[in-house]
Image (tube, rainbow, N blue to C red; front, top):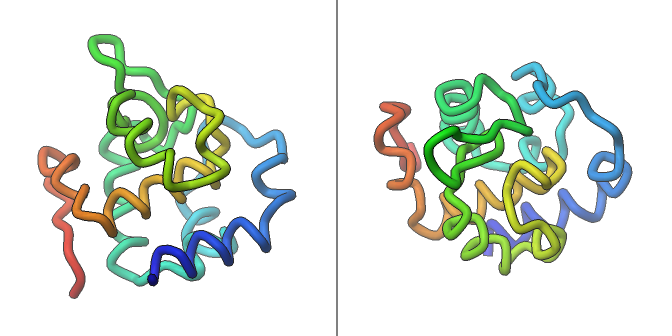
Amino acid sequence: MLETLILTAAMASAPAVADMALPAVMPNRWHDSGHPVWNTAPAWIRDFGACVRNHESHHNYRAQNRTSTASGAYQMLAAVWQGNAKWVPAAKKYKKARNAPPAVQDAVFIHSVTHGGSDNWNGTHCGHGAS
């Protein structure tokens, strides 16, 4: 229920954000203050997401892993992306995370984490779970 509210509010209030031409590497502060998805997400998700983005791609939403199908700011494997993207309407048209706008990648990350997918990022040592 929480993720539905987060994603609905984010997508409804930010159609212009998803359509904007944004640089591939976004400053962390942009996502932690002003981005609709992060403004409505619990603090533990914002903290976990910022840590994962920094560890996985240095906040590069266009990143592509050289040795796997992982891509985007959160380095989601293509199968993980596609499995979670089907639950986020704006994400369905993107086969890889790196092709989706930042707001869409963030929404898919939130969906993944709130549905037990935070273990995908155990290797980041970012920690996870509600506090």
